[in-house]
Image (cartoon, rainbow, N blue to C red; front, top):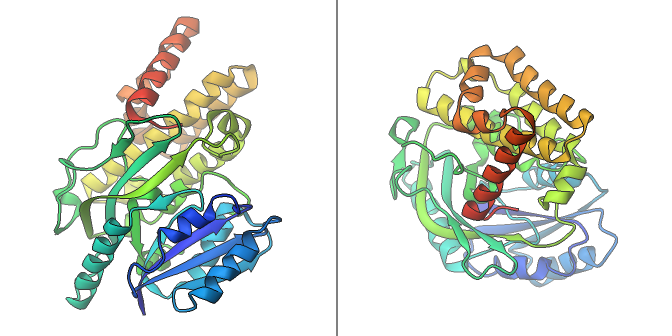
Length: 338
């Protein structure tokens, strides 16, 4: 068994996927790279096959009809032989030295029969045109360089949470939660991280800047204009997070609090995008989203509604809208997203 399977979902990625794959090649014999060509119509299939032919012990090339990002991740997991799973999007890349150190640590934990459920590391918002890149780290919140449980974590700040770029999951956790991401849907990375969390008991945090999260292509799904065009898919993922996990059933308070924090951030993003769209239909969708939370969990609703983020997005009238969007722009500047 390999130590780590790195899944690279790839759709029409010929112009940038080689940088991603080259950052993963020849680091450690315990790493396998699974390139999932998701119905591309450019040279993605050819490039994937080239790598699989040149590095048969390291690279698998899987070709399928287009299913979207979630479908590609599902396929990658199904073909994985690693104890741990990492997703690296084809327009992103990793720091080779950091990945080497992380895989070495995972191997030590496995050999000591102390394999944790989730490995966490830092990531970098690698935004085009910005010289000073924003590093998202968890120092002061998560214990470093030791296995820990939920009771050991600190308090996350409003804009800080564990994204797909931060996470390496033990494949047993993904099996335990029967993870199956929806096909033809954007923003499922939130489901990839969120849905397994109720099953996570042990974690390990390394202060390594592993993942470079590229932001800058006009057609990128996280481009704000694209997110507004695809708001229904953002809302679908948001609603799946509400419906598929009953936070009331989670007995560990810090785990429940963290998951509520994560849900609050995603719901805030959805709400602000709807406020920016600004027409009657968008405002109706925003009200429906919050009504959905209230229906599923009244305590959670009031917890989110009275939080700092929840308060900001419910300021009334045009003045309230201006305050909300001003606060959002300041958060963008501070945290470097979009």
